[in-house]
Length: 116
Image (cartoon, rainbow, N blue to C red):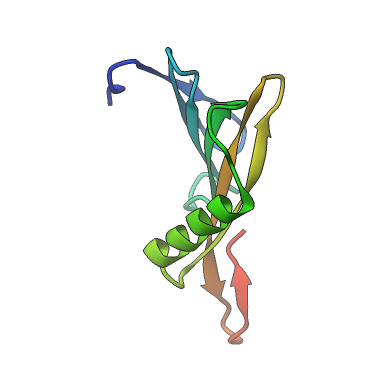
């Protein structure tokens, strides 16, 4: 994988799974994907997708977040739970949107539950 022109990519190693982040050098825009694993054999229980912007770069409204969340739900379908919210990148002057995706599971007794 190679980043688009003007972007740098780096790995983000965590105990719960290695994420990937990219940043655009001239605009300061950043994006990341972080899978969260519970063990070494299972698929991720959760994926966090973040888009971060310098303060003032983009107006992030509740309506925008709601539209992003609805579009992700439509794309992924009923097998996934999706939530989106405002985000602030700690230690920076960056704000953004984080989208959290989990796979819904059906337990043998018929109760629906989150795949977290």
